[in-house]
Amino acid sequence: MMRFYRCFWQDNTGQILVRQFTEIEAQIKKGTCMPQPKNAMEIFQLLDKSNCRECGVKTCLAFAGAVFKGQRKLDECPKLDRETIERFSGEPEHQNIFKQNRDEYLKKLKNEIANLDLASAAKRVGAWFSGGKLTLKVLGKDFSVDTKGNLSSDIHIHPWVAIPFLNYVLYCKGLPVSGNWVSFRELKDRKERYPLFRRRCEEPMKRVADIYTNLFDDMVHILSGKQVEKQFESDISVVLHTLPKVPIMVCYWSPEDDFESSLNVFFDETADENLDIGSVFTLGVGLTQMFEKIALRHGFPEDVSSQ
Figure (cartoon, rainbow, N blue to C red):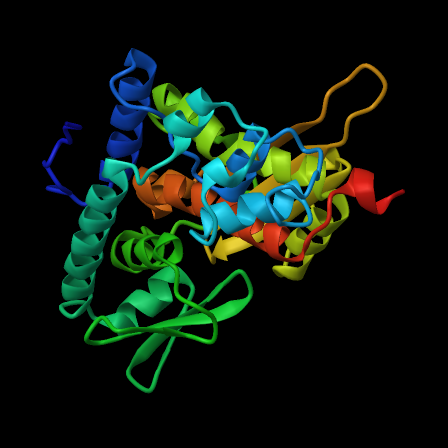
């Protein structure tokens, strides 16, 4: 039975997200918990990628997406060995617990918003207040909250956006963006959590960029991405304004000669002053998950499309 710390957001840092991820990772390493695919890309990596169609699906990538959505089962692939199927099949216990905690925390934040002067908060966080709502830009799209804590947007409201958004409105110090970029591990007292951020954000984002390079380039620029300064230029490099005072810079270098590809995510050095570290972590991981979903729905592997 998997155990979780239930000291649930007793302060305003929102770091339970990182704590739960860390505990799950530790149990996986000890062998007390089997790692489950977190997305269709990880399922795809388990397959032999032969596109044999013996499962009834045209490609291994399409099959992986169907398994992740619950439309097909992993054991329908005739090429997978029994050990792999048993190891990665089934619903991980921690997902329901994590979702429950997340929903409880979201409710808590909405209740706190109801006691906040949104008009004053708007000036502090780089938003505007009109019609009883505070509104700001999230990746170029309007995102609003009213005096009762109700959220509204022209796009689907994902928890990975909602929680950082509310924390930002509640606790952002309003420091101006400095223009000095640092990695997640360089934010205050976060060096020990960087390996988890690397596994949950940078590495899977790099896999998307490796497989769907052209689509990845399109995605980061469609999301109101801004050109980076010359010293940060790479094959694909862009600044994304996830929140007005918490920009994220993504730099991707394609493989060349004997050098492997690489991807790094950077934050303004004021990020952990304008947003709690748990929400900074959530923004990075959520951004990666969004890229993965778009790639699986609309993308096509570069090595196939170039043929």
